[in-house]
Length: 199
View 1 (cartoon, rainbow, N blue to C red):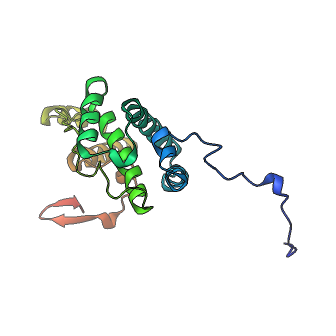
View 2: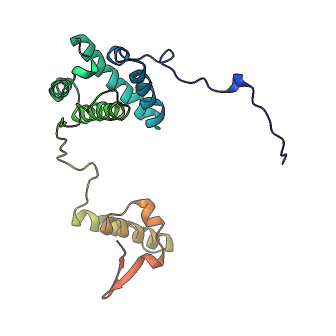
View 3: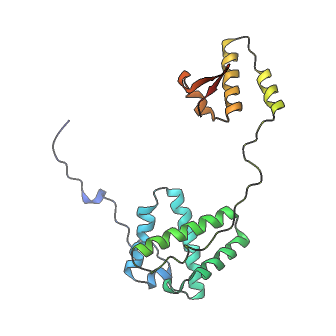
């Protein structure tokens, strides 16, 4: 391995993101250079996941387009404006999408408060819609279904016994496949006449 220093040509370095290279919504642009810088930093330094960044970008752009349509600047925004926006979103979007939009706006305004662009976060006190699931996404086997499943596994070979033990462990402990496969003998303890997996 060489210990020589190698100079990297400046043409291979990434160009910094500026307000000229990324569109800034009108209410942010009107608030000044510090607001524009904070807006850009929110998307370039605070959010690492590209999918989250893209979703939050859409959410924030829609919100600021709505604000610009009404002629509101950053300092004019109050919790009642955000509450009205959330209600408006709830007419067309799913509850989880509305909550995601509100989360994006809250996080952005948190950054604007820290950067002293605005005095308070107008989205902080706004409650999003309640998300209620009536049914679990993962179906739960009944006792009879679990018994039929275990009885269907042949036990005349070592592979069948292994499979039955794995399936029984998953069914009775609600453990995931990866958790059961990673278990060792030390993950079980004796409780009376039975061996029980540790929680």
